Structure formats: structure tokens, C-alpha cells
Image: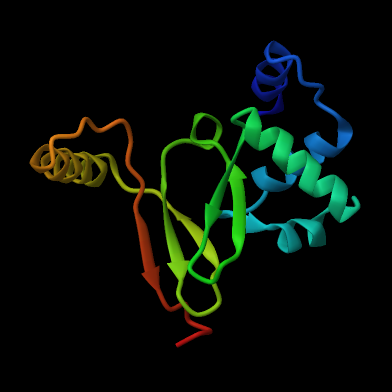
Length: 139
């Protein structure tokens, strides 16, 4: 998976450094967006380097930031890398997990999104669904 990312960065004049590659590999290995703290636990890089890598990768469209209900920013690989999916967000601890819908569910959701957008006269470019719940540990 890193080769398309390397080409993407190179086309934008951005070096694919060891630290940036480590961030991408860490995000490939996890389920759902992770905070800087959670990523730092997986990586042997200084936190300042992690923040810089996330900023560069975010500006390049490789990493996407999600701002959770607990105020924590979590990061994941962009959809062009991971594929389209949605999130389960715990209202208690803020943990985020990926949720992939079946093709049929995704089609029904897209129809609802298009219908709702039509009522306010906007053109849909994309959609994202976050289901806020309480995980087993927070119940």
C-alpha cells in the first residue's frame, strides 16, 4: 500500500521520510482513527516529529483528521487509500472504530443523503456517517 502513497507524495514534491512512512504503516495496522497519543504508543518517534508528519501527510491528502465528541483529534488514512467507510464513535471514551457497510446499505444511505440534500438544494460530493454509541467498557 505504501507505493501509491510514495508516488502521490513524490508528485507533490514531498519526501516520503522514514517518520512519515512509520506513521502510514501504523495507521494501516489499526482499526479506526487514532489519536497522537495512541499512535505515539506504537511508534518510536518523538511526539514533535509525529505532529509534523501528520501535518505534512494531512496537507498532502494522505491522512484525514477527525474531531471527536471528547475533543480529541484522531487520524486515519484517506479514503482513496483505505476505501469508503463510516465510524462508530464511543460517547464515553471517544474510541473510534471503522464501520463498512454492505453495497446495498451504502446504496440506501446514498439515496437518503441525496434526498435530504435535494431538500436544501445542494449537490452532494460525499458523505460520512458517524454512529455515536457507548462501547462495552463505557456502558
